[in-house]
Image (tube, rainbow, N blue to C red; front, side, top):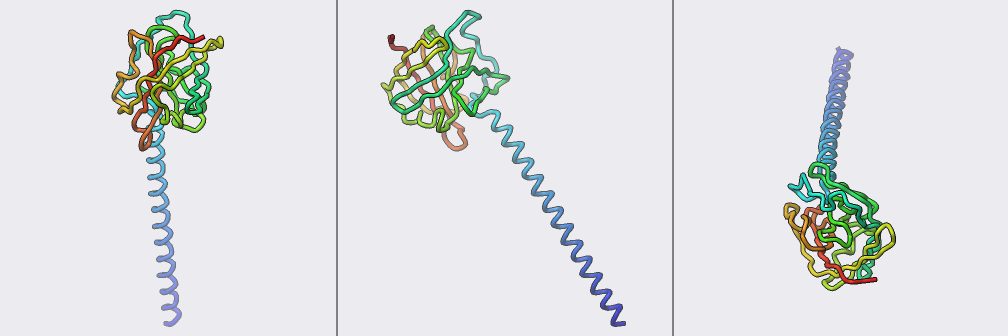
Length: 199
């Protein structure tokens, strides 16, 4: 009889151990599921970083003409100097880069009438110090041929991602620079600058 009881106790311990392992396995699967869902949501969010909502079609301001496009941006007052690469909008998602500022290729050409749009991440080597820009600061944009275009900041404001007017075409020459700002970059810091005669 004693042996039977001992066996019974061993069996209960074994069942308890199996139940514990089963619970740990289910908990692990649950945690993995939560991580995968969070990763999926983050990737969906990441693709919309630096985008403005409700712009699925942006008019090409150059209409096929040969044009000067930015290759470098320099803002001496806030120690910004970074290369600029071409970017476009696909659907309502704006192309992004971790390494450089971006020029919206459908925006206006340098030195022409229209809105020249340059944007980039709020990162140390791109536009982290853009927040310190002040009205009256000079901005220098170099094109691929080495010609320099000078602009002077006349407006600085923070907008929501659905305030698309700041990046839309204009009938006058203006430079628009923006970056993400706020919690999870949910707002846009927008700098507007007008051209200055410079050689």
